[in-house]
Image 1 (spheres, rainbow, N blue to C red):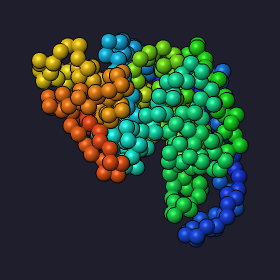
Image 2 (tube, rainbow, N blue to C red; image 1 turned 45 degrees about the horizontal axis):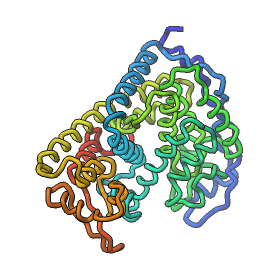
Image 3 (cartoon, rainbow, N blue to C red; image 1 turned 180 degrees about the horizontal axis):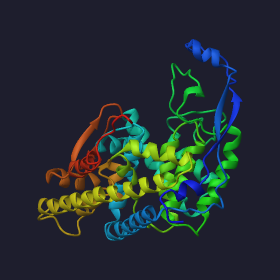
Image 4 (cartoon, helix red, strand yellow; image 1 turned 180 degrees about the vertical axis):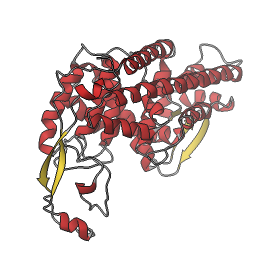
Amino acid sequence: MTSESAPTAVWPPLDYESGPWDVSPVSGMARLDRWRVGQPYKAAIPHRMGDHELILSPRVSALAEEAASEIRAFDAEHGGTVAPYAALLLRSESASSSEIERLSASARRIAEAEVTGAGTEHALMIVGNVRAMNAALRFAETLDVAALQSMHRALMERSDPEGAGQLRQDQVWIGGRAFMGAGSPHDADFVPPVAGRVPGALEDLMEFAARMDLPALAQAAVAHAQFETIHPFEDGNGRTGRALLQAMLRAKGITRSVTAPVSAGLLADPSDYVAALTAYREGAIDPIVECVARASLIGLVNGRNLASDLADVRLAWEEQLQGVRADSAARRLAEGLFQQPVVSAQLARELLGVEANEHRHIKVLEERGILKQTRHHKTRNSTWRADDILHALDRYADRPGRWRPLR
């Protein structure tokens, strides 16, 4: 098949089933929602996909292959000799993925929250997303439902310790009205499957994700769309689903050392992302594959700009460190800041691999204008930050455009 409409014909649209909205009225529920209690609503029935073929239009197939090739090249450029860059890129991808969900914080706030365990609610939630991305990469070779639950647990263990890693037991929906926790799925934009269908649908999804006979980037994009369609958790599905996408790119060998900046590219046009997920549920896979491929190509441009900015920081620091021995601990600490741009005394000691004198080496970097101290009044502890790196990360976050309401 070669026509642009072919994928719509071969990928099944969702079926739906009716069931009663069986909830108890709650305080603050609108009169309309009270009337809807017991009234039927329609929830999606996820189709089986484990043995389904991916038939794309030639144009989208070529675009996906181009994006996969560019990601591999990017990984080769920045995943070897510049290993600390991988840690910064993972944090940045986690922040971008969070921003799609309207969670935003500066690079400094995120890095400080990661070190101190305290900070703004958004910063702490983004730190949870960093943990989820790390978990995704750890489980890349053993992807199964338990791995998905581990990713979600890492994401949500602070903000929702009871629900972290637990498959939902209730109906959820996307869009529509809500008031003080009330509302109903009757006028939602999309109603995922009933909770009883979630475990089987996830097992089928992971069978599909494990296949090695499909074009890898397209497979990852479609698996991501199916995960978002199943919506297996009460909260955190978008961030967990994008962590799954990264895990699949690693499992298929598209990335080996770095995190592909896909979410940074999705931020360029979030409405296109939402439309692609909707089209997937209507039976078309071209849009979501094209969306992920284009987002990858856009994100890679931004990722290379970040790499260039960090290279400039290195050059500037070389000037600032003139007269400091090449094999000194202060220089080793400066290099470690490209992995961890905010440090405590203990973290500096860990980066140096020594048991004492970390304050002396921190002081050298303070005197050279590389580190600045922050005193945290709540904890009465201090951290030191590398503003040059943090500013480069903020520029990375600003380039795709901050979150704007979805059209």
